[in-house]
Image (tube, rainbow, N blue to C red):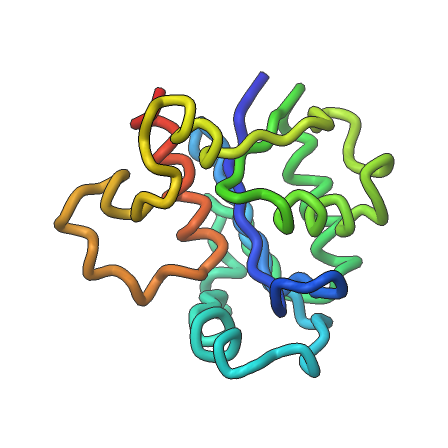
Length: 176
């Protein structure tokens, strides 16, 4: 079963939050990144604007990149493109960081948990628990753990779903 590392960015830590972006990186390197255009802008506060909206990446040239799938559009478009991207894999399991919101929002892309693609294992996994199981404080700074001191200055990329998915993958690889 192939591992897919993912992260989401959303409008806030509350029950009715809406998805802003999602980034996925397969253990073999395939990449999917989407930014939604139909999230609830009324839920965007100053922190989300400064730390999430200002860290969205997609440009016109990204949409034409053949090596990675980049999608910008409404939920229906993101769902369709994500289903296509996931179909290249026989079976996948999903790994996130603190996945409470990430997994719920992933499932909501497809309507609910019973509608996720059949090749997606229904139990997600998180690196927080893996950190704890390995005797490492789960509150460790992820970039520093994964890449060392030299990448600490890249904080401007934090809270971008694709960047965070890459960090989750790097943490998993180091923990393994």
